[in-house]
Length: 425
Image 1 (cartoon, rainbow, N blue to C red):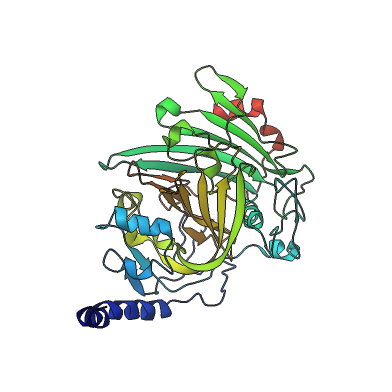
Image 2 (cartoon, one colour):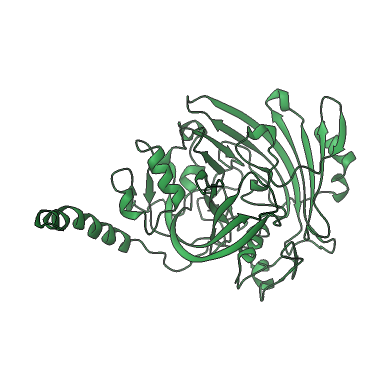
């Protein structure tokens, strides 16, 4: 290195790295502070979750000017790709870490030891209603913890979806769903089921009343997923065994697969799974401000309006899924980041055969503290090839409140092909 280059390194490059180190030192995860009951500003009559941390100030904003300082530590490859794809608009506001996630006490009381994986990880035996692997030690423990995290019991609600194109045009749709989750301590479960779901699209009109029934077991090897669809054109219900893995529903316009719903779901047998360890990464967390913002302010070109998202330094368990050589799936490689506290999948990155990144996905969560329960307020998928993004499972003050524990439980007999026909109408 020449004398001139040494001087440049000392006075120009080195200070930026030192500044980055100082900024990172100001960010830490802290201790858990679970919110187990509604805060005083909460009104159960409306779909609003006031921010418990509204007084928190931004610690750091990462944008095109400084993101390179963080690529080797707190940013994920997908986030780096977002900065490079949308340098003028993508930014991340970093706030103090508030480890606010909680579950009902009944869930914690059941959580004492690990369940058991069976049939090469396709099945699970354990105490129903608990966190299945409180002491996870392998990749599929984290996947199952996400799938079986507490997320209500008898559920009813509606949720819109949006696809935003590079020209700023927007495709809008909405639907309704009813579901029973069996992995919880509040209902008896000796059926071997994970849950049952019926959903229907109510808009746009060309898809209206296109309805779906899914019955999911706790062992995809012994009892594979059972699925039926109702076609409004023929007014008939038929079996639909293909709605799994990388099947792409028409409403998704090719952006996401069936097994990407709710982060990840379904059978796991097409991938080799590996646990890459626990690390600290910036994740979309405590997204109350986003939840309380009107939808029209959120849907900006290329990505959601980053002014309303909150990122925190989070302990995440990193899991890699690589397609088996004798299996097929349109997503050959996936990297998943699971929250250490709530077990939610917070970020996913997908890669092609040459390990080139295809999409970056975010699942910003809040603590629905009236339950209590931590879930994402939407699923955002950013497709780098088409520069479109998809927002699904949107939970917002702009839409009717989802009922997570109905006073009157669903009649299990409604989750049948004939019941699907009635639900669709």
